[in-house]
Image 1: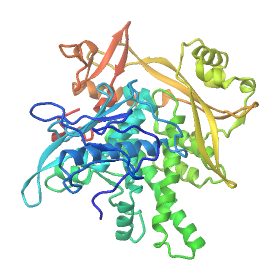
Image 2: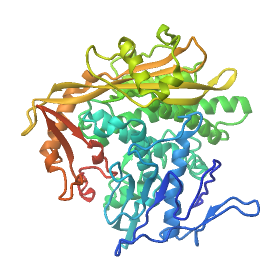
Image 3: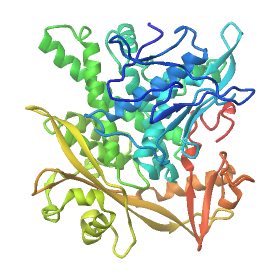
Image 4: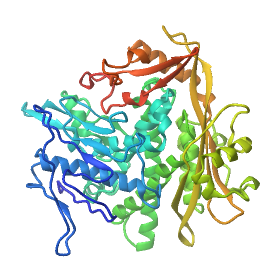
Length: 546
């Protein structure tokens, strides 16, 4: 297997030493002086050759320049995958409201890595571990392609579905973890080296546990020196909601139910593509397995990741995400329903949805309320968007008399695949959110009530009037109340959830190790629960706690 792959950027972008661009900046700090190390030098284009970052030795993996360029390239390539026309079809934005995501490849000594909204950063740590030969080695999380893609997935999802960062629904937090894991999976599918190697070893199949499904193998093995487990999580699993061995309040554990269901669909997509290509090209299924995996991964990417734009605001359940997947796939592949059928089957089999009706999504339809709507004004004017939403509360599922917020609108161009070929379709995404109150469990210091966020996402065709509703999804808040109770009580019992006045340092900055609860007028709002989603499981001694 080739140890290094190169990544080429085709878009207009300004690259500086570091590496640094307008959206990313590598911050490499010296561990003793805490001063910024000199960044990898950018060689501008010359003589018809593209620009590149200078790395003295591409096999010196622990050198400063290699580590800086490697982690930067993985983050940037992951971002570009999400931005492709057949996925989100737009440029990503960060949740923290600043243009640059900071990447810290050597953040300190700790068996962990994480995305943190408050510091605008991806932080990758290193730790000592003993090898099979009992030699002391250093494991750098920034050198793990899986871990870097995983943490980038957290940052990207935070920019798309920002309410999840403060969610108290275990499935909402588990969705964050599952999407990060699936981001690592898809990025490994896009590596020709990994794809060819794994398919050669498995005779063209992804049905069994492989480098694709076992996440962060080096990291997992280093955390478990007795070699009981060589990875953090395995996407190839048969776990179900309600299983006795699935902790319903642990997002890492719970995430395997969702990621396992979706990986099962990915296997079916690959097998379908193999059969189709073997018949068309007159070849064996093994001979076409690589091409089939590339095509299946592209379809899987469209199904799973473009659905994130369709998520309604607020506390999300796995079933909410399933409906978003089905809605986005109806638009992306209107003439092929196999993927949607497999999603329904897996979600029902794993206890995510009770039946097919619970995952039902109406087909695109004409809507009289949109007939004379000026979408450009809706995009540009908060007042126009609020006025439209207030006049059409029934369409958007906004409870009567309740105040609501209108989120920034999006204009996106997404590629769809019809029998006649690919077609780019422009749509407007309108999101509205509101807060509802529900009773709190009897924690030691809890108020009687807590506030939770719900909302609706409406996707509107941008074509000339009459326009159609492409999709309209509303959060189903009542589904997860008992699970929210259990999560809050667990966080309180562990000392992780504290009143906001106890969650700041002497200089006023929020403490990294806690989740803060704002208390006002007999009600409670929780902030920063997603900060507990470090790469290491919470019961690992090496994780240092959340």
